[in-house]
Length: 263
Image 1: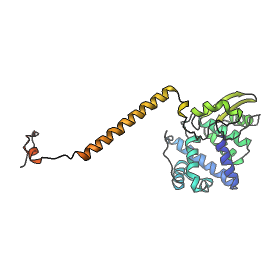
Image 2 (image 1 turned 90 degrees about the vertical axis):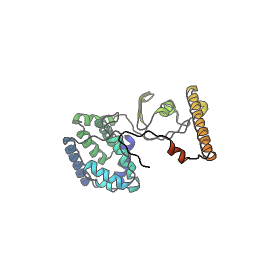
Image 3 (image 1 turned 120 degrees about the vertical axis):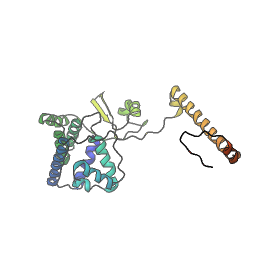
Image 4 (image 1 turned 180 degrees about the horizontal axis):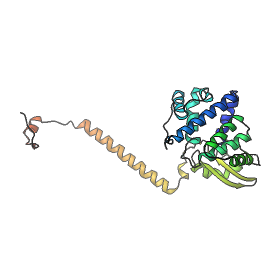
């Protein structure tokens, strides 16, 4: 969530977003979503459909919000599909492990720490929409103002800094956007979110004996299937079937009741 918030903060500030227009559009967006919720709008599907380009993304944004806000229409078309899918599948997805209210409160805390006035406006309204009260909003911002620090890092194993060494096995088994922690460290507590991961296959010698045996059996099955397919293909080319139509006509085939035959 921290990385996503920082991404939108960079973009919204970088394009010199008009604050008045932004506030108005966020207000309209929240109003539209309240109407959809009051009307019993169906929740987002558990497996959202992929969006392949900016045009398709804008169409889905309009369907989701009732309109496409200016900051999304101005987003580079080449990257809009990916940006929208991340927003839709993580921030807006009601089936994630973290409820929507707490995702918005996390976003608000990060927004206040950056600080980004646009993200603060949006995350405050979204948190309220999800049921957050004034005390929860204030507490989230106060927590962000304590000794907590939010950073974004790219970590590469096995050459990661010492503070990340203990996470290697956990990260190997964790898929984005999972949260890891909190873990007690010398300076306090650390919570990490896996935003993206590029993992190379494990060397064979590092795999457990059970996995190696499973892979060996799968390889044997694939080898047998390929050998069988090759022999069938060879037989089809070498053995040319001969059809004796006269003999087939002479066979006393059973005739279903009620059916008629012709000579």
